[in-house]
Image (cartoon, rainbow, N blue to C red; front, side, top):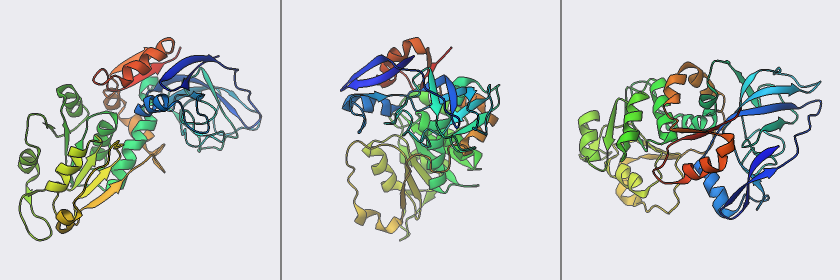
Length: 338
């Protein structure tokens, strides 16, 4: 069968591999859709993921149909539509350094544990939307880490897939007012479409002044003015200016949560922010959220569908990967399978 592999630095190719063998405790999945993540380009640039340097199967945002169930396997049946915990495979992280990747026609779940690797979803959920389950779990974890809740006021920096997913999760938790900040008007339009209460184009507007209008004025712990009334900030952009902006305007005991990958060091003047007592929290992966977010996707499939900017067939997977890594060319690319 066909599979997409990183075969060397900045080299992604089609590879012919054997069909997976299905043991008595295993489940065979036919991949129906697979999203492309920014980390796929990173894996390609460095030539793979140790210990699979130079031969890394890609694809860790899948949705699939169960096509074969081992004699002793439990929890799913042939024909089920499923979303997948790619971190729970016994042969390594699916598409992130493990033995298999979901940018393939078939994947086998070895030694399945009911409720651990797979969750069955309704058949009416579009495959492309179901393939958002993994990245939306990342966004949902960031929201959980932030502690945001009913009545809070929140700001999300970055209207890419993670930022948009965070905006949806914030509203689902009852956050009273959610603002999304970005520099691309088209992304900000999508942010409003998925439920953001307001947007700010930081290339054209003063973020601090606009947030003061939206969330009110506030002080730090020493009652010094010049802060905004925002309770929670989420950095889904990964640029130093976001952290600098938040630390300059955060009120007393506000929370900054960072799920974004910062590729360069960020300088922080801890003396200057001491009086704010701001909480800075990192958010990585989805320790418990992989199937928590599935409920939201099932309930609001129409909103999540707006996050997808491009879909391409599996035959054009290499083109899809190139599109996804080209700055400004696409927001969320999903590959579909027959």
